Length: 341
Image 1 (cartoon, one colour):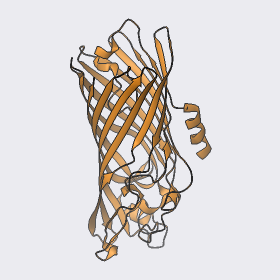
Image 2 (cartoon, rainbow, N blue to C red):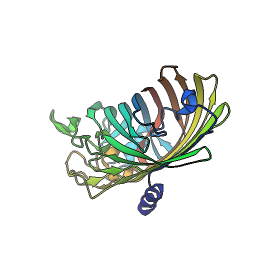
Image 3 (cartoon, rainbow, N blue to C red):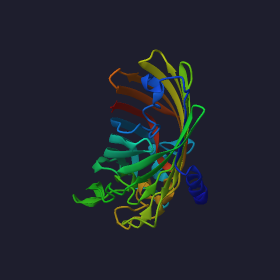
Image 4 (cartoon, one colour):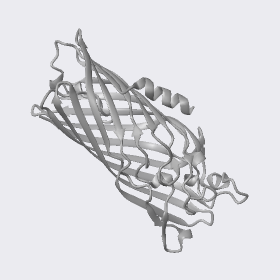
């Protein structure tokens, strides 16, 4: 399976294909950009800038093993020891503030920078019925990319993108737990802010503007480069496949529908911290992190004549299969602002 993810990433080779009707001024259409949840879908002309801000919220509640939901009692009983787990996660809220910039020093290259700031909160229940919350907050992994055009033929355009995620997010986030006796301890993997590794993120994106509507599709691979991080583990590779359709209600407003499928692997290695004990809680078990999920998103785009763009997208899962017990996703929401000049 690991080789399949690496092969998918290599085949992606970070190509982005955009096919546009030559007779349309696509920059003046609300659907000239993909839905706000899609990254790096377009290039810019020489000297152009674009700044963006996205606020993303993911709500997770309840545990799942395979495609079956588990009660808290079932989650606790699923532990590997004779007593089961001592702690079960109940729900998690993740908020991300993503600041972005794109600049084209020439028609032949567009540079991109994405800077995330994360806030996470997870509720837990102990085997004795106690409740506690852990929180983390800080800078995530910064992403840099270069977008390069390949050809322009009969109205079709293709560009290549190479993106690299930098290990700027902390993997040593701490908080207090009932077992820590008032001290802060290293938290399990989902509460960390970064991967701790350099990650290659190649993608293939196709899009086409038609009279009054548009469509697109994208495949993205996440490949963890090198060996383990400084905490002796490496997050699993991942694959993301999505497609969307957008309809123009006017030149300024469009609505969209997007279907997204994601698959990710288990963690390799393990954090040596005593507090990250796979016998205590499933979030600390590197063998219970893989899964796949399909989400349906609905969105709206608004474009002003001055280059300001506002967008909103809301998504819910239509299928989840998790190597659990693992918290399932209930919903995702993204609101974004973009300004190009």
